[in-house]
Length: 526
Image: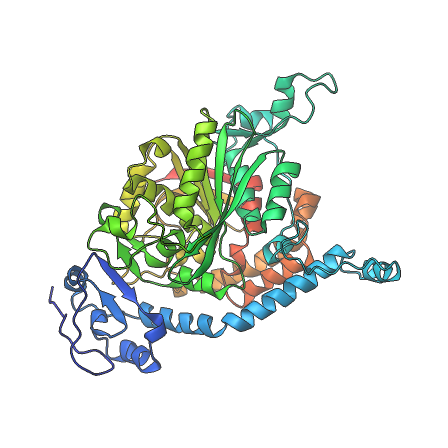
């Protein structure tokens, strides 16, 4: 390949000197101008020649004269739109959540409860967003909180042809071991839950506030809530990463569950993180998505040694009272596993949370945390974006070889198709892809989901047809599946978004919950 370190920047000026250091390719989107986007589209200059691109010497040699193709300028256009929409989206989100909670807490959509509460001087004004009864948009789309218990056939490993074939089984605590003349074993079987059911519901409620999650875990599921954690992002100077930890029992637990919060519908910063193309090399771990690394606690963007970017020990760089997500959660998990010697670690998340759930065990492997990896039982992600290159996929596969890593994808969900694959950012998927179609018929695939390229014109009609089908299904699924699958007006309106942006509505956690509960899958297809 041809070195282009001395090529002139697209915007003019003297030749640019590439920064030395570890493998990396960082696109500074805040420095990208309209003329740069036009240049990428029309002139197809080497991507590393632009002034807004930072690449190491080795990366510059590897990339050579490759341009950004159509994907890089298209991604930058999307990022510009998301940046411009930040404050409007935030205001809409706050106003909409206030309105929906106001209606819900005062009796529902008919409005009679509001009138009655005004008459009684007991009108509920949901000003406290951290209250246990306050729900986000995700919680309004799918308000279900109860777990679906495993049947005896499921628990016994029957031929259910479902994702629910994991060996690990999570139990709830018995409420009263002396009532009703039931034996302890009978009560435990009645409260037996399979791992996919627990993880998909944990990934869903991870979007809510701490009080809401704690109430559901302790009082609805009868599990043991350990804690809710905010992770500091030193590059954005704010807490950007939320996660919670629970155990299935307060004593002698069989599972320690770590659930990461995902991409919030109106948080354009989250969407920008999902879409951006920048990556950083971490040695044997491969090239990993820069935004996800920052969310977990990245220390440096340009390390000469990969272990300086993500050192094994926290260097104390976070402000007082703040913590980097990876380091804090690693120690919480370590403490819980020591407290519960028979427990296995289960890591999960939806959307952005799924990406963090995949990187977390890879970082454990990078740091030689064999004691924690030896206790890893399951990594289950839902609607997870791509997080690294093929080297990372192989590294993660080795790190999780004693565990099970399943990546669940529902139909045309757009997020598993991002970041878009470009010649200069070859993102790949790892794990077993458990793919469900619009009616929750599924199959296990080794590698990527069908239609990995979101812009493939061959799937356009099918995508819009699926959006219409999902809307119809959402309105009538309850008639065949039961009242637990009845969707409200908010969920149906959300599905209408798929009629405009195909794949957007397919990202809802509701479909992932329904797929786990109703779906059947075919044997793995290699």
